[in-house]
Amino acid sequence: MTARGRWIQQWDPEDETFWNRTGERIARRNLLFSVLSEHIGFSIWTMWSVLVLFMGPEYGLTPADKFLLTSLVTLVGAVVRVPYTFAVAVFGGRNWTIISAGLLLVPTVAAFAVMEPGTSFSTFLLVGLLAGIGGGNFASSMTNINAFFPLRKKGWALGLNAGGGNIGVPVIQLVALAIIGASGGPRVLLGLYIPLIVVAAVLAALYMDNLASVKNDTGAAKDAARDPHTWIMSFLYIGTFGSFIGYSFAFGQVLQNQFDRTPLEAAYVTFIGPLLGSLIRPLGGWLADRYGGARITLWNFVGMGAATAVLIAASMAQSLALFTVAFVGLFVLTGLGNGSTYKMIPGIFQAKAHALGLEGETAAAYGRRLSGASMGLIGAVGALGGVGINLAFRQSFLSYGSGTGAFVAFLACYAVCFAVTWAVYLRRPAARSAGVTPATEEKPQLSYAEV
Image (cartoon, rainbow, N blue to C red):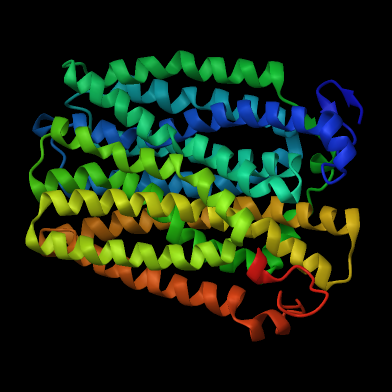
């Protein structure tokens, strides 16, 4: 391994001697500061989930207006994940972390400037769109960190990276709770984050590294886009992360509109679901490392369906206590599923490498190449699930005056996700037709059931 100007020219994490001597220390350092930047990015992306709680009748916005606003913020966060993924290869992981962290100042300062009664709805929409760039930090961070860790550590590392980023959602909601409780305004919240953004960019510049092997492989995204597993996993990620981010934006508004909670009452519980869902995500990755990502994902969708069925019953009965408990439970399951689905991605492409007859470092390089490139596309499509969730809630409240109709649609979605996971990654004939030997046969290769 050689480093020049924060560029590491040779990187082979699958070599245990290299990993134990120097690789692990460098990888963990980059993981730490990647988590910090991604964490703040998530906070900025989801800041409108709490800003709308500050926006009382004097702002002149209807519940439908607020759901539309959060939908568009989520949409931009999903779309920018694609170029953010490519940016790692173009600029380098460290360099892009510095740039992407600095860009977070734009939506934060803009929101600080316009956040007051009398501002037009169109202005709020425009400034909300700017906040969407915070969602891109996840894609570039996951692509970057994926390249640093060996396959046997990816579930844990990617789960920790994503969980540390996701926890930016409940953190900004907790900070908002404290500010609302102290009778502070939204500009206090925004003012706290401006110096934190600067700190994250400076620390990335001082302590992170670029990997030359990632920079030199800009064509991998085209190959990943042509692979059907990229799009299958994108759909499954809609069910897990799309649910997490969509519910993170919508939870407080549902409590306000369906159960007549005040902003402070909603804020008291809004952060709990995203917090637990973020903290549990590394466990989802660890369980996937141990038992197989496909198996954990399959049963996780069963749990998500059951929690959603309880939400439907609680919504129809107008039981706030049961609704809150079930919603928090659903958040926990989205976090577990986030970890297990992201573990599946490198495992799937490693399995394909073995099916093609590749071995050793050649197979590992093939898996890293396609999994790293696919993560941004999967993350982008998955985040679109958050758009769908907020639009579904908007339509459900317009049509029925509650979120019940939306929950019925979500239940159907989880059933389809369960079926796809089983049919593609756990049904043995599917594994054979893909050229992957099932785990029960003699001298097995890596099977999709083990991803």
